[in-house]
Every structure is written in C-alpha cells, then in structure tokens.
Image 1 (cartoon, one colour):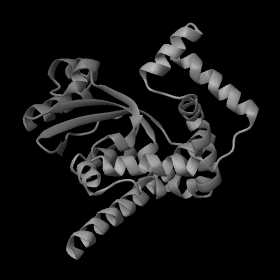
Image 2: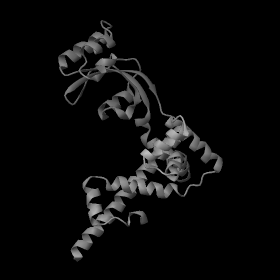
Image 3: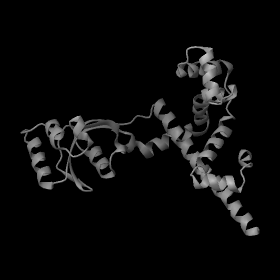
Image 4: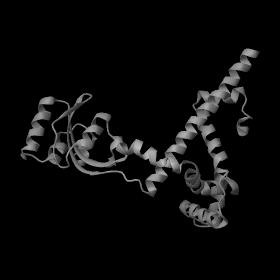
Length: 245
C-alpha cells in the first residue's frame, strides 16, 4: 500500500512491538476501499447533518472549538460522517452475494434466547435444587437469587435476551435442543453444575438487517486477512534488508 511506504524500520518495529501495525493497516486499507464509493450530494448533506447533530454542539463556535481540539479538518469530518454510509454501500457491492451462506454458517450462534440459570459448584445441592424446581416445591427465580454462584444471581437467574453464540459451547447445544419452559437436570461445565430452563427462543431470520450484519462481518474478516498478509510482507522486507546488510 502506497500510504505505508513512508514507514521505515524503526517505525515498523515500534508499531509491531505495540500491536499497532495491523490496526493501522486495517484503517488505511478501509480508507482506500471506501474511497472507491461515490456518494450523492443529497446523501452527503444528510449524513453530515446527522453526524453534527450527534455531536450535540449548540452552535458554530462550539463546533469549531471541538474541531480544533480534535485536530480535524473539514475533510476529516466529512470522512467520519460518510464512513457508515460508504461502508454499507461497499458491503452491499462486494459481500451481499455471500451474506446468505455466511448467515447459515452462523445461524445457530445468532438465534436469540432467554433462559433461567442456576449455577452451583456442589453437585449434591445442584441435584436437590433441580428436583425442587421440577416438583414445583420452589421457584427457579427465588433459588437463583439466593444460591446461584454467578452474575445471574443479580437478575434472579434470568440471562438474555442474548445470542446463543454468547454462551459456553456446551451450554449452546443445551439451549438449542431443549423444550421451552422445561427445567433440565444439572449439566457440568468446568467446575460448576448448571440448572437451565429455556424461557424463549427466537430463531434468527435472514432479513435486510441480518444481510447487512453478515456482509459487514465478511468485510471485517477480509480486512483482517488482508492486513495480516500486508503486515507479514512488510516485516519480511525488513528481515531481507537486514540479512542483505
């Protein structure tokens, strides 16, 4: 990339040492790709207006102060304002055709679930609490708020709504295959026993929002892959030059 040609050995080493080289390449690569997207005058004005409104600056004077404080030019502000618009359009142009397959690859992680959770380290107590809930001798929420040994204690055992993919891999399988409203026997995950009851389950749908989300994921993955390759080439050149010396 031409914009990285100014980096000498010391700069590259410093960026690499501080784990900043790949983020820098991603930013430059993203700017390079988004520069290929043209935006109509009307859409540009709308995006700029929305961006400035989000800053919540009451007048031109406060805006100029903010701009100076952040060392931004008018062009910088335009780029910031148009970033989301251009990113959506770039993703639509380049990754929409792959969004459906990406969705089906990730669908089980994207389903939204709400579940009750009671986490106990002692297997005997876990079994006891499970039987009490199953026999309706105690409320799940009451036992969770009193005895659960995780953060769910603060929410009376309720977890979610959240993507199934946010849960532990073993728990994910449990959440996807169990009847709603039916308490399940304790399962061992790491050093705890989990009693779980699925409260609601909403399968992910491939609507416009999800297509945009999948296309953006693909774009970000592409940026990561390209950045790693470019980074390796830059560092390899350094090694080659050092050997040549």
